[in-house]
Image (cartoon, rainbow over all chains, first blue to last red; front, side, top):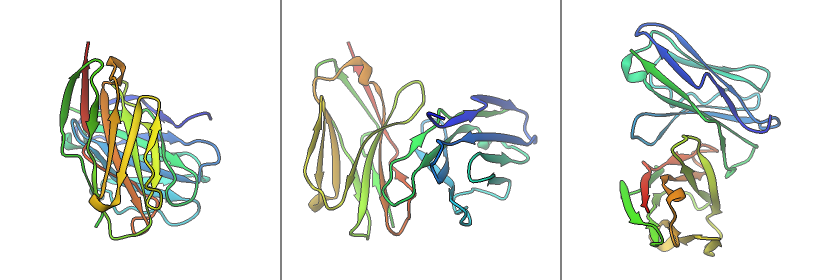
Length: 114
Length: 115
Protein backbone atom coordinates (compact mmCIF):
# COMPACT_ATOMS: atom_id res chain seq x y z
CA UNK A 1 0.00 0.00 0.00
CA UNK A 2 0.87 3.64 -0.11
CA UNK A 3 1.51 3.90 3.59
CA UNK A 4 1.75 1.86 6.77
CA UNK A 5 -1.69 0.72 7.82
CA UNK A 6 -2.61 -0.16 11.39
CA UNK A 7 -5.80 -1.61 12.77
CA UNK A 8 -7.81 -1.08 14.78
CA UNK A 9 -7.27 2.63 15.24
CA UNK A 10 -8.80 2.44 18.70
CA UNK A 11 -9.27 -0.48 21.03
CA UNK A 12 -10.86 -0.54 24.46
CA UNK A 13 -10.47 -3.78 26.36
CA UNK A 14 -11.08 -5.07 29.83
CA UNK A 15 -8.19 -5.81 32.11
CA UNK A 16 -7.10 -9.42 31.73
CA UNK A 17 -8.25 -9.82 28.14
CA UNK A 18 -5.92 -10.52 25.22
CA UNK A 19 -5.63 -8.08 22.31
CA UNK A 20 -4.15 -8.25 18.84
CA UNK A 21 -2.90 -5.23 16.97
CA UNK A 22 -2.22 -5.40 13.26
CA UNK A 23 0.31 -3.64 11.06
CA UNK A 24 0.47 -3.72 7.28
CA UNK A 25 3.79 -2.19 6.15
CA UNK A 26 4.67 -0.48 2.91
CA UNK A 27 5.13 -3.01 0.14
CA UNK A 28 8.81 -3.78 -0.35
CA UNK A 29 9.87 -2.58 3.08
CA UNK A 30 11.80 -5.43 4.66
CA UNK A 31 12.14 -3.89 8.11
CA UNK A 32 9.21 -3.50 10.50
CA UNK A 33 9.19 -1.98 13.96
CA UNK A 34 6.78 -1.68 16.84
CA UNK A 35 7.01 1.22 19.26
CA UNK A 36 4.85 2.23 22.19
CA UNK A 37 3.99 5.77 23.15
CA UNK A 38 2.44 6.23 26.58
CA UNK A 39 0.54 9.41 27.38
CA UNK A 40 2.89 12.37 27.26
CA UNK A 41 5.91 10.15 26.79
CA UNK A 42 8.42 9.50 24.05
CA UNK A 43 8.58 6.45 21.86
CA UNK A 44 9.65 3.19 23.45
CA UNK A 45 11.08 0.51 21.16
CA UNK A 46 9.36 -2.87 21.43
CA UNK A 47 10.42 -5.21 18.62
CA UNK A 48 12.11 -5.17 15.22
CA UNK A 49 11.77 -7.54 12.26
CA UNK A 50 14.31 -7.56 9.43
CA UNK A 51 13.63 -9.87 6.53
CA UNK A 52 13.90 -13.51 7.51
CA UNK A 53 16.23 -12.87 10.44
CA UNK A 54 15.23 -13.62 14.00
CA UNK A 55 13.39 -10.60 15.40
CA UNK A 56 15.00 -8.28 17.92
CA UNK A 57 12.68 -8.60 20.91
CA UNK A 58 14.88 -6.69 23.32
CA UNK A 59 12.28 -3.98 23.94
CA UNK A 60 9.33 -6.14 24.87
CA UNK A 61 8.43 -5.17 28.44
CA UNK A 62 7.21 -8.58 29.61
CA UNK A 63 6.41 -12.07 28.38
CA UNK A 64 2.81 -11.01 27.97
CA UNK A 65 3.92 -9.24 24.81
CA UNK A 66 4.68 -11.09 21.60
CA UNK A 67 4.74 -10.33 17.91
CA UNK A 68 4.97 -12.17 14.66
CA UNK A 69 5.39 -11.25 11.07
CA UNK A 70 3.91 -13.56 8.49
CA UNK A 71 5.36 -13.87 5.01
CA UNK A 72 7.64 -10.93 5.57
CA UNK A 73 4.71 -8.57 5.43
CA UNK A 74 1.86 -8.16 7.90
CA UNK A 75 2.73 -8.13 11.59
CA UNK A 76 0.59 -8.78 14.63
CA UNK A 77 1.45 -7.56 18.13
CA UNK A 78 -0.31 -9.58 20.82
CA UNK A 79 -0.71 -8.52 24.42
CA UNK A 80 -1.97 -11.22 26.74
CA UNK A 81 -3.76 -10.61 30.02
CA UNK A 82 -3.76 -6.87 29.48
CA UNK A 83 -3.04 -4.55 32.38
CA UNK A 84 -3.93 -0.89 32.80
CA UNK A 85 -0.30 0.12 32.34
CA UNK A 86 -0.48 -1.32 28.83
CA UNK A 87 -2.71 1.59 27.84
CA UNK A 88 -0.81 3.52 25.19
CA UNK A 89 -0.59 4.23 21.49
CA UNK A 90 1.14 1.40 19.67
CA UNK A 91 2.95 2.60 16.58
CA UNK A 92 4.19 0.48 13.74
CA UNK A 93 6.81 1.64 11.24
CA UNK A 94 8.52 0.14 8.23
CA UNK A 95 11.64 0.95 6.28
CA UNK A 96 13.91 -0.29 3.55
CA UNK A 97 16.95 -2.31 4.54
CA UNK A 98 20.06 -0.49 5.56
CA UNK A 99 21.32 1.47 8.51
CA UNK A 100 20.17 5.02 8.66
CA UNK A 101 16.96 4.53 6.77
CA UNK A 102 14.13 6.72 7.94
CA UNK A 103 10.95 5.07 9.08
CA UNK A 104 7.46 5.53 7.74
CA UNK A 105 5.03 5.34 10.62
CA UNK A 106 1.43 4.24 10.71
CA UNK A 107 -1.25 6.22 12.52
CA UNK A 108 -1.09 3.93 15.51
CA UNK A 109 -3.54 1.94 17.60
CA UNK A 110 -4.76 3.64 20.76
CA UNK A 111 -5.21 0.92 23.35
CA UNK A 112 -7.18 1.62 26.48
CA UNK A 113 -7.37 -1.02 29.19
CA UNK A 114 -10.24 -0.48 31.62
CA UNK B 1 25.03 3.79 25.07
CA UNK B 2 22.78 5.68 22.75
CA UNK B 3 20.80 8.54 24.16
CA UNK B 4 18.87 11.50 22.81
CA UNK B 5 18.00 14.43 25.05
CA UNK B 6 15.42 17.06 24.24
CA UNK B 7 15.63 19.31 27.25
CA UNK B 8 12.70 21.51 26.28
CA UNK B 9 9.50 19.79 27.32
CA UNK B 10 7.20 22.48 25.99
CA UNK B 11 7.63 25.75 24.11
CA UNK B 12 4.98 28.37 23.43
CA UNK B 13 5.47 31.10 20.86
CA UNK B 14 3.33 33.63 19.08
CA UNK B 15 2.83 33.25 15.37
CA UNK B 16 5.66 34.65 13.23
CA UNK B 17 8.23 34.20 15.96
CA UNK B 18 11.29 32.06 15.27
CA UNK B 19 11.76 29.05 17.50
CA UNK B 20 14.63 26.61 18.02
CA UNK B 21 14.17 23.09 19.31
CA UNK B 22 17.25 21.60 20.93
CA UNK B 23 18.54 18.07 20.55
CA UNK B 24 21.66 16.60 22.14
CA UNK B 25 22.73 13.04 21.44
CA UNK B 26 25.19 10.48 22.77
CA UNK B 27 26.78 7.67 20.82
CA UNK B 28 30.08 5.80 20.76
CA UNK B 29 29.93 5.22 17.03
CA UNK B 30 31.52 7.45 14.42
CA UNK B 31 28.87 6.48 11.88
CA UNK B 32 25.37 7.44 12.86
CA UNK B 33 22.23 9.12 11.60
CA UNK B 34 20.07 11.79 13.14
CA UNK B 35 16.42 12.42 12.43
CA UNK B 36 13.63 14.81 13.23
CA UNK B 37 9.99 13.77 13.20
CA UNK B 38 6.85 15.84 13.66
CA UNK B 39 3.76 14.47 15.41
CA UNK B 40 0.75 16.73 14.82
CA UNK B 41 -2.44 16.36 16.88
CA UNK B 42 -3.64 13.69 14.46
CA UNK B 43 -0.97 11.44 15.95
CA UNK B 44 0.90 10.23 12.90
CA UNK B 45 4.67 10.75 12.93
CA UNK B 46 5.92 12.65 9.92
CA UNK B 47 9.54 12.36 8.78
CA UNK B 48 11.24 15.75 8.43
CA UNK B 49 14.95 15.17 7.93
CA UNK B 50 17.78 12.65 8.11
CA UNK B 51 21.43 13.64 8.48
CA UNK B 52 24.45 11.33 8.58
CA UNK B 53 27.41 11.90 10.84
CA UNK B 54 29.78 12.74 7.99
CA UNK B 55 27.73 15.62 6.70
CA UNK B 56 27.86 18.64 8.96
CA UNK B 57 26.43 21.05 6.46
CA UNK B 58 23.43 22.87 7.75
CA UNK B 59 20.25 22.38 5.82
CA UNK B 60 17.38 24.67 5.03
CA UNK B 61 14.00 23.63 3.73
CA UNK B 62 11.57 26.47 3.45
CA UNK B 63 10.94 27.79 6.96
CA UNK B 64 12.79 24.84 8.52
CA UNK B 65 16.52 24.70 9.14
CA UNK B 66 18.78 22.32 10.97
CA UNK B 67 22.11 23.00 12.67
CA UNK B 68 24.30 19.92 13.13
CA UNK B 69 27.38 20.39 15.33
CA UNK B 70 29.42 17.29 16.09
CA UNK B 71 31.64 19.24 18.49
CA UNK B 72 28.70 19.70 20.85
CA UNK B 73 26.76 16.56 19.78
CA UNK B 74 23.78 18.69 18.89
CA UNK B 75 21.28 18.66 16.07
CA UNK B 76 19.01 21.64 16.60
CA UNK B 77 15.92 22.47 14.59
CA UNK B 78 14.75 26.02 13.88
CA UNK B 79 11.39 27.09 12.53
CA UNK B 80 11.41 30.58 11.10
CA UNK B 81 8.24 32.70 11.15
CA UNK B 82 6.27 30.02 12.97
CA UNK B 83 2.67 29.30 12.05
CA UNK B 84 -0.21 27.78 13.98
CA UNK B 85 0.06 24.66 11.80
CA UNK B 86 3.53 24.10 13.22
CA UNK B 87 1.95 23.21 16.56
CA UNK B 88 2.94 19.62 17.22
CA UNK B 89 5.28 17.40 19.17
CA UNK B 90 8.72 17.22 17.62
CA UNK B 91 10.99 14.25 18.16
CA UNK B 92 14.71 13.99 17.57
CA UNK B 93 16.08 10.47 17.00
CA UNK B 94 19.39 8.65 16.57
CA UNK B 95 20.38 5.51 14.71
CA UNK B 96 23.91 4.16 15.05
CA UNK B 97 25.87 1.06 14.08
CA UNK B 98 25.74 -0.48 17.53
CA UNK B 99 21.99 -0.14 17.74
CA UNK B 100 21.49 -1.36 14.19
CA UNK B 101 18.62 0.09 12.30
CA UNK B 102 16.58 0.94 15.37
CA UNK B 103 15.84 4.53 16.21
CA UNK B 104 16.32 5.88 19.71
CA UNK B 105 13.99 8.79 20.28
CA UNK B 106 14.17 11.77 22.56
CA UNK B 107 11.24 12.52 24.83
CA UNK B 108 9.89 15.10 22.41
CA UNK B 109 9.21 18.83 22.59
CA UNK B 110 5.66 20.14 22.50
CA UNK B 111 5.50 23.27 20.37
CA UNK B 112 2.45 25.51 20.72
CA UNK B 113 2.13 28.35 18.25
CA UNK B 114 -0.54 30.87 19.19
CA UNK B 115 -2.20 33.23 16.76
